Image (cartoon, rainbow, N blue to C red):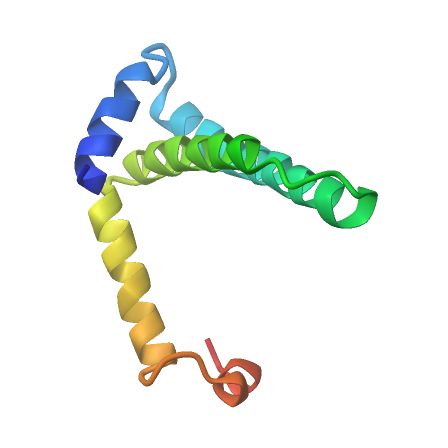
Length: 108
C-alpha cells in the first residue's frame, strides 16, 4: 500500500462536519492520545510484568497513522511528502547513519 493511498482511504472516515481548524486540532490531539495509549501498553510490559501486547500495540500504532494522516491533511501535505521531509532531515543529521556523538552535539 502506498502512503498516499492509505491517507486517502483513511480520510474517508474523517468527520465531514469538522472545520479546517478542528481537523488540525483533532489530528494533533489524536496523535498525542494514541501515542499515550501505545506507551501505556509498553509501560505495562516493562514496569508491571505484563506480556507485551504486540497486537494491541500494532492497533494503537495504526491509530497513530490515522491521526498523522489527518494532521498532514490539515496542513495541506500528503503522507509521502511528510515522510520525504523527515528522511531529508535525517540524512542531513546523520549522513553516515546514527552517530551517538552527532546525536549529543546536534544543533537541530
